[in-house]
Image (tube, rainbow, N blue to C red; front, top):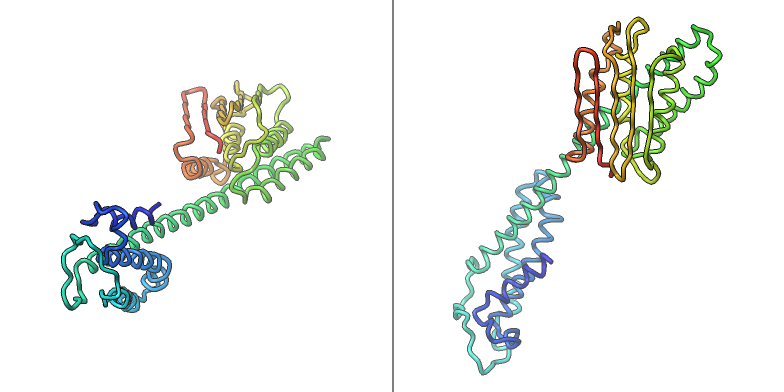
Length: 329
Protein backbone atom coordinates (compact mmCIF):
# COMPACT_ATOMS: atom_id res chain seq x y z
CA UNK A 1 0.00 0.00 0.00
CA UNK A 2 2.82 2.39 0.81
CA UNK A 3 4.44 1.77 -2.59
CA UNK A 4 1.19 2.44 -4.44
CA UNK A 5 0.59 5.61 -2.43
CA UNK A 6 4.11 6.82 -3.22
CA UNK A 7 3.80 6.09 -6.94
CA UNK A 8 0.43 7.84 -7.04
CA UNK A 9 2.05 11.15 -6.04
CA UNK A 10 3.33 12.04 -9.53
CA UNK A 11 -0.07 11.13 -10.96
CA UNK A 12 -2.27 13.23 -8.68
CA UNK A 13 0.23 16.11 -8.47
CA UNK A 14 0.66 16.37 -12.23
CA UNK A 15 -0.61 19.62 -13.77
CA UNK A 16 -1.86 17.47 -16.66
CA UNK A 17 -3.95 15.20 -14.42
CA UNK A 18 -7.10 16.36 -16.22
CA UNK A 19 -5.88 14.77 -19.46
CA UNK A 20 -7.04 11.34 -18.25
CA UNK A 21 -5.31 8.31 -19.76
CA UNK A 22 -3.47 10.57 -22.22
CA UNK A 23 -1.36 11.56 -19.23
CA UNK A 24 0.84 8.48 -19.69
CA UNK A 25 1.90 9.72 -23.15
CA UNK A 26 3.15 13.08 -21.93
CA UNK A 27 6.94 13.12 -21.86
CA UNK A 28 7.36 15.38 -18.76
CA UNK A 29 4.98 13.17 -16.80
CA UNK A 30 6.81 10.05 -17.96
CA UNK A 31 10.07 11.52 -16.74
CA UNK A 32 8.59 12.50 -13.40
CA UNK A 33 6.96 9.07 -12.91
CA UNK A 34 10.16 7.18 -13.78
CA UNK A 35 12.01 9.37 -11.30
CA UNK A 36 9.60 8.28 -8.55
CA UNK A 37 10.04 4.62 -9.52
CA UNK A 38 13.80 5.05 -9.19
CA UNK A 39 13.34 6.83 -5.86
CA UNK A 40 11.24 3.91 -4.62
CA UNK A 41 14.07 1.55 -5.54
CA UNK A 42 16.50 3.86 -3.73
CA UNK A 43 14.31 3.72 -0.59
CA UNK A 44 14.50 -0.07 -0.38
CA UNK A 45 18.22 -0.09 -1.24
CA UNK A 46 18.88 2.40 1.55
CA UNK A 47 16.59 0.62 4.03
CA UNK A 48 17.98 -2.89 3.49
CA UNK A 49 21.61 -2.16 2.63
CA UNK A 50 23.06 1.36 2.86
CA UNK A 51 21.75 2.18 6.35
CA UNK A 52 22.17 -1.20 8.16
CA UNK A 53 25.35 -2.32 6.37
CA UNK A 54 27.16 1.00 6.14
CA UNK A 55 25.76 3.66 8.48
CA UNK A 56 25.06 1.40 11.48
CA UNK A 57 28.46 -0.30 11.01
CA UNK A 58 30.31 3.02 11.39
CA UNK A 59 31.08 3.22 7.67
CA UNK A 60 29.63 6.68 7.39
CA UNK A 61 32.06 7.84 4.69
CA UNK A 62 31.08 4.89 2.50
CA UNK A 63 27.44 5.65 3.31
CA UNK A 64 27.84 9.25 2.11
CA UNK A 65 29.62 8.06 -1.05
CA UNK A 66 26.86 5.53 -1.70
CA UNK A 67 24.19 8.23 -1.30
CA UNK A 68 25.93 10.61 -3.71
CA UNK A 69 26.55 7.77 -6.17
CA UNK A 70 22.87 6.87 -6.01
CA UNK A 71 21.93 10.46 -6.82
CA UNK A 72 24.31 10.44 -9.80
CA UNK A 73 22.80 7.16 -11.03
CA UNK A 74 19.30 8.60 -10.61
CA UNK A 75 20.18 11.67 -12.69
CA UNK A 76 22.15 9.63 -15.21
CA UNK A 77 19.39 7.09 -15.82
CA UNK A 78 16.81 9.82 -16.20
CA UNK A 79 18.97 11.60 -18.76
CA UNK A 80 19.70 8.39 -20.66
CA UNK A 81 16.01 7.59 -20.90
CA UNK A 82 14.65 11.09 -21.52
CA UNK A 83 17.67 13.04 -22.69
CA UNK A 84 16.59 13.03 -26.32
CA UNK A 85 12.96 14.12 -26.31
CA UNK A 86 12.74 13.71 -30.09
CA UNK A 87 12.57 9.96 -29.55
CA UNK A 88 9.12 10.37 -27.97
CA UNK A 89 5.94 10.81 -29.99
CA UNK A 90 4.42 14.25 -30.23
CA UNK A 91 0.76 14.81 -29.39
CA UNK A 92 -1.86 17.31 -30.25
CA UNK A 93 -2.25 18.58 -26.69
CA UNK A 94 0.17 20.78 -24.77
CA UNK A 95 1.61 19.80 -21.41
CA UNK A 96 1.21 22.18 -18.48
CA UNK A 97 4.55 21.06 -17.07
CA UNK A 98 7.04 23.93 -17.01
CA UNK A 99 9.41 23.83 -19.96
CA UNK A 100 12.63 22.07 -18.97
CA UNK A 101 15.92 23.91 -19.45
CA UNK A 102 17.95 23.22 -22.57
CA UNK A 103 20.68 21.60 -20.52
CA UNK A 104 19.68 19.54 -17.51
CA UNK A 105 20.97 20.79 -14.14
CA UNK A 106 22.67 18.20 -11.93
CA UNK A 107 21.28 19.67 -8.72
CA UNK A 108 17.71 20.01 -9.91
CA UNK A 109 15.44 20.89 -6.95
CA UNK A 110 12.62 18.76 -8.38
CA UNK A 111 14.93 15.73 -8.01
CA UNK A 112 17.18 16.77 -5.11
CA UNK A 113 14.43 17.45 -2.55
CA UNK A 114 12.50 14.16 -3.09
CA UNK A 115 15.83 12.32 -3.13
CA UNK A 116 16.85 13.48 0.33
CA UNK A 117 13.30 13.07 1.67
CA UNK A 118 13.39 9.41 0.59
CA UNK A 119 16.80 8.90 2.25
CA UNK A 120 15.58 10.60 5.45
CA UNK A 121 12.38 8.52 5.50
CA UNK A 122 14.30 5.25 5.06
CA UNK A 123 16.70 6.30 7.82
CA UNK A 124 13.94 7.23 10.29
CA UNK A 125 11.96 4.02 9.70
CA UNK A 126 15.09 1.87 10.00
CA UNK A 127 16.19 3.69 13.15
CA UNK A 128 12.76 3.23 14.74
CA UNK A 129 12.77 -0.50 13.92
CA UNK A 130 16.27 -0.82 15.31
CA UNK A 131 15.23 0.82 18.58
CA UNK A 132 12.27 -1.58 18.84
CA UNK A 133 14.60 -4.55 18.26
CA UNK A 134 17.01 -3.30 20.91
CA UNK A 135 14.14 -2.82 23.35
CA UNK A 136 12.82 -6.34 22.69
CA UNK A 137 16.30 -7.83 23.14
CA UNK A 138 16.72 -5.96 26.41
CA UNK A 139 13.28 -7.10 27.54
CA UNK A 140 14.05 -10.75 26.78
CA UNK A 141 17.38 -10.48 28.58
CA UNK A 142 15.72 -8.98 31.65
CA UNK A 143 13.01 -11.65 31.73
CA UNK A 144 15.64 -14.39 31.40
CA UNK A 145 17.60 -12.82 34.24
CA UNK A 146 14.54 -12.66 36.46
CA UNK A 147 13.73 -16.31 35.71
CA UNK A 148 17.28 -17.27 36.60
CA UNK A 149 16.80 -15.58 39.97
CA UNK A 150 13.47 -17.25 40.65
CA UNK A 151 14.13 -20.85 39.63
CA UNK A 152 16.92 -21.70 42.15
CA UNK A 153 14.71 -20.25 44.85
CA UNK A 154 11.94 -22.74 44.07
CA UNK A 155 14.38 -25.63 43.96
CA UNK A 156 15.80 -24.71 47.34
CA UNK A 157 12.37 -24.54 48.95
CA UNK A 158 11.24 -27.93 47.67
CA UNK A 159 14.53 -29.56 48.69
CA UNK A 160 14.13 -28.02 52.13
CA UNK A 161 10.65 -29.57 52.43
CA UNK A 162 12.02 -33.00 51.53
CA UNK A 163 14.80 -32.59 54.10
CA UNK A 164 12.19 -31.88 56.79
CA UNK A 165 10.31 -35.07 55.84
CA UNK A 166 13.42 -37.23 56.02
CA UNK A 167 14.20 -35.85 59.49
CA UNK A 168 10.70 -36.88 60.55
CA UNK A 169 11.17 -40.31 58.87
CA UNK A 170 7.78 -39.83 57.36
CA UNK A 171 6.20 -42.66 55.32
CA UNK A 172 5.20 -39.97 52.86
CA UNK A 173 8.82 -39.39 51.88
CA UNK A 174 8.71 -41.60 48.72
CA UNK A 175 5.62 -39.77 47.51
CA UNK A 176 7.34 -36.50 48.30
CA UNK A 177 10.31 -37.54 46.21
CA UNK A 178 7.99 -38.13 43.24
CA UNK A 179 6.36 -34.75 43.78
CA UNK A 180 9.75 -33.11 44.03
CA UNK A 181 10.90 -34.90 40.90
CA UNK A 182 7.88 -33.56 39.01
CA UNK A 183 8.47 -30.07 40.33
CA UNK A 184 12.16 -30.07 39.41
CA UNK A 185 11.42 -31.49 35.96
CA UNK A 186 8.87 -28.75 35.37
CA UNK A 187 11.19 -25.99 36.56
CA UNK A 188 14.14 -27.24 34.52
CA UNK A 189 12.31 -28.09 31.28
CA UNK A 190 9.33 -25.74 31.15
CA UNK A 191 10.55 -22.53 32.78
CA UNK A 192 12.74 -21.77 29.76
CA UNK A 193 9.60 -21.51 27.61
CA UNK A 194 7.84 -18.21 27.09
CA UNK A 195 4.47 -19.89 27.60
CA UNK A 196 3.25 -23.28 28.81
CA UNK A 197 -0.17 -24.86 28.95
CA UNK A 198 -2.25 -23.64 31.87
CA UNK A 199 -2.93 -27.25 32.78
CA UNK A 200 0.79 -27.92 33.32
CA UNK A 201 1.21 -24.79 35.39
CA UNK A 202 -1.71 -25.68 37.65
CA UNK A 203 -0.47 -29.27 38.03
CA UNK A 204 2.86 -27.85 39.15
CA UNK A 205 1.07 -25.73 41.76
CA UNK A 206 -0.90 -28.78 42.96
CA UNK A 207 2.32 -30.75 43.44
CA UNK A 208 3.87 -27.83 45.29
CA UNK A 209 0.89 -27.53 47.65
CA UNK A 210 0.78 -31.31 48.17
CA UNK A 211 4.43 -31.19 49.14
CA UNK A 212 3.75 -28.40 51.60
CA UNK A 213 0.84 -30.33 53.11
CA UNK A 214 3.25 -33.10 54.07
CA UNK A 215 5.10 -30.88 56.48
CA UNK A 216 2.17 -29.18 58.20
CA UNK A 217 -0.47 -30.52 60.56
CA UNK A 218 -3.43 -32.16 58.85
CA UNK A 219 -5.79 -29.97 60.88
CA UNK A 220 -4.26 -26.80 59.47
CA UNK A 221 -7.02 -24.78 57.75
CA UNK A 222 -5.80 -24.88 54.15
CA UNK A 223 -8.19 -24.26 51.25
CA UNK A 224 -7.18 -24.78 47.64
CA UNK A 225 -9.73 -24.62 44.84
CA UNK A 226 -9.49 -24.44 41.04
CA UNK A 227 -12.62 -23.73 39.03
CA UNK A 228 -13.14 -23.21 35.31
CA UNK A 229 -11.94 -24.64 32.02
CA UNK A 230 -8.15 -24.91 31.83
CA UNK A 231 -7.70 -26.78 28.55
CA UNK A 232 -6.52 -24.89 25.50
CA UNK A 233 -5.04 -21.97 27.44
CA UNK A 234 -1.44 -20.90 27.99
CA UNK A 235 0.38 -18.87 30.63
CA UNK A 236 3.93 -17.79 31.28
CA UNK A 237 5.55 -20.36 33.62
CA UNK A 238 6.16 -19.76 37.33
CA UNK A 239 4.16 -16.54 37.40
CA UNK A 240 1.62 -17.65 40.05
CA UNK A 241 3.68 -19.72 42.44
CA UNK A 242 5.62 -16.90 44.22
CA UNK A 243 2.38 -15.55 45.74
CA UNK A 244 1.43 -19.04 46.95
CA UNK A 245 4.93 -19.66 48.23
CA UNK A 246 4.76 -16.38 50.13
CA UNK A 247 1.59 -17.52 51.91
CA UNK A 248 3.20 -20.77 53.07
CA UNK A 249 6.28 -18.91 54.21
CA UNK A 250 4.58 -16.21 56.27
CA UNK A 251 1.14 -17.66 57.06
CA UNK A 252 1.94 -20.76 59.13
CA UNK A 253 2.55 -20.82 62.87
CA UNK A 254 1.17 -23.70 64.96
CA UNK A 255 1.06 -21.47 68.03
CA UNK A 256 -1.23 -18.90 66.42
CA UNK A 257 -4.55 -18.84 64.61
CA UNK A 258 -3.29 -19.18 61.06
CA UNK A 259 -4.83 -20.18 57.75
CA UNK A 260 -4.16 -20.18 54.00
CA UNK A 261 -6.84 -19.82 51.35
CA UNK A 262 -6.01 -20.17 47.64
CA UNK A 263 -8.65 -19.83 44.92
CA UNK A 264 -8.07 -19.90 41.17
CA UNK A 265 -10.95 -19.13 38.82
CA UNK A 266 -10.77 -19.32 35.02
CA UNK A 267 -13.52 -17.61 33.05
CA UNK A 268 -12.94 -17.52 29.30
CA UNK A 269 -9.46 -16.10 28.79
CA UNK A 270 -9.34 -14.49 32.23
CA UNK A 271 -7.57 -16.10 35.18
CA UNK A 272 -8.21 -14.73 38.63
CA UNK A 273 -6.24 -15.90 41.65
CA UNK A 274 -6.84 -14.98 45.27
CA UNK A 275 -4.29 -15.91 47.92
CA UNK A 276 -5.12 -15.01 51.51
CA UNK A 277 -3.25 -15.93 54.67
CA UNK A 278 -3.04 -14.94 58.29
CA UNK A 279 -0.14 -12.76 59.32
CA UNK A 280 1.68 -14.68 62.04
CA UNK A 281 5.05 -14.50 63.72
CA UNK A 282 7.70 -16.34 61.75
CA UNK A 283 11.46 -16.66 61.95
CA UNK A 284 12.92 -16.68 58.44
CA UNK A 285 16.52 -16.06 57.54
CA UNK A 286 17.33 -13.28 55.11
CA UNK A 287 18.30 -15.66 52.29
CA UNK A 288 14.94 -17.46 52.49
CA UNK A 289 12.72 -14.39 52.44
CA UNK A 290 10.52 -13.97 49.38
CA UNK A 291 10.47 -10.20 49.00
CA UNK A 292 12.97 -10.28 46.12
CA UNK A 293 11.12 -13.12 44.40
CA UNK A 294 7.84 -11.18 44.60
CA UNK A 295 9.48 -8.07 43.18
CA UNK A 296 10.86 -10.07 40.29
CA UNK A 297 7.46 -11.65 39.65
CA UNK A 298 5.82 -8.23 39.56
CA UNK A 299 8.43 -7.12 37.02
CA UNK A 300 7.74 -10.20 34.91
CA UNK A 301 4.02 -9.43 34.99
CA UNK A 302 4.75 -5.89 33.78
CA UNK A 303 7.01 -7.22 31.02
CA UNK A 304 4.88 -10.10 29.75
CA UNK A 305 1.35 -8.89 30.50
CA UNK A 306 1.47 -5.10 30.11
CA UNK A 307 -2.05 -3.68 30.40
CA UNK A 308 -3.32 -7.27 30.59
CA UNK A 309 -3.16 -7.84 34.32
CA UNK A 310 -4.17 -6.25 37.59
CA UNK A 311 -2.51 -6.96 40.92
CA UNK A 312 -3.98 -5.81 44.20
CA UNK A 313 -2.37 -6.49 47.56
CA UNK A 314 -4.26 -5.67 50.76
CA UNK A 315 -2.86 -6.05 54.25
CA UNK A 316 -4.04 -5.31 57.76
CA UNK A 317 -2.92 -6.39 61.21
CA UNK A 318 -4.25 -9.94 60.81
CA UNK A 319 -4.41 -10.90 57.13
CA UNK A 320 -2.50 -10.55 53.88
CA UNK A 321 -4.39 -10.93 50.60
CA UNK A 322 -3.29 -10.98 46.96
CA UNK A 323 -5.75 -10.61 44.09
CA UNK A 324 -4.26 -11.21 40.67
CA UNK A 325 -6.17 -11.10 37.39
CA UNK A 326 -4.48 -12.00 34.08
CA UNK A 327 -5.87 -11.80 30.57
CA UNK A 328 -4.39 -14.98 29.11
CA UNK A 329 -2.96 -14.76 25.59
